[in-house]
Image 1 (tube, rainbow, N blue to C red):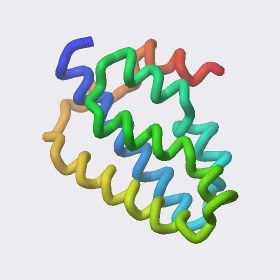
Image 2 (cartoon, helix red, strand yellow):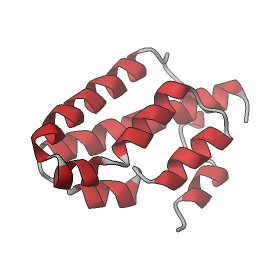
Image 3 (cartoon, rainbow, N blue to C red):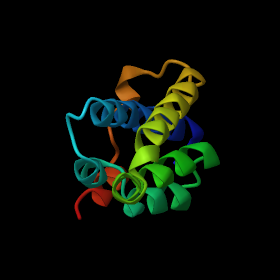
Length: 115
């Protein structure tokens, strides 16, 4: 995967992450749903294997813990959601506009969601 494709995919991951985190903050979805959509270890593993930057990997990895955080440390849940949301927004602002033709998930990304 070249740098241009990686930046495009990073932007997509961040856009989806922001939407999911916003939905969690509004209680429109559960942490379990967020886990099944995007915030799961297979995504973190794929990002590591494909040498994405540490910031994105840490964001997704931390988000995989949201269900446990809500259950085990409920008083920290909203704060962590806010931190993750702000972190994703910050990262997204740092990525320049991408070409529309490059915004679709590639076959390798789609494979990770087949499970």
